[in-house]
Length: 108
Image 1 (cartoon, helix red, strand yellow):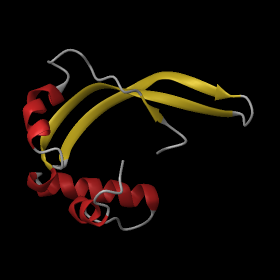
Image 2 (image 1 turned 90 degrees about the vertical axis):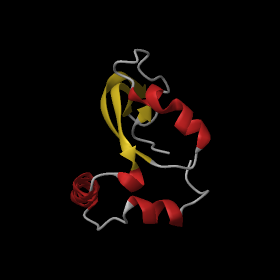
Image 3 (image 1 turned 180 degrees about the vertical axis):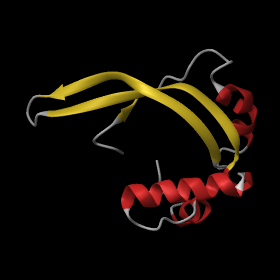
């Protein structure tokens, strides 16, 4: 769980901007399936922690669209995700399928 950024639990209520609603049945049928989604976020509010001086933003999804099951995602998008993670961390990341298998049951 991130200590620097929080995520609002609410999703957009409008079906036109909440693509998860379209796959609700699939999510119930196979909850272990990983999905690749594209999301637009903004900051809902910022919490000031007076003890530490930290400012912690709470983000929210303003729009979310489903691309595909992660295992069926276009290779171009899979490569983009790996490249972005490497740029952010400076480390070569595991592909999501390998990460999911290695952390099965360990990730919240």
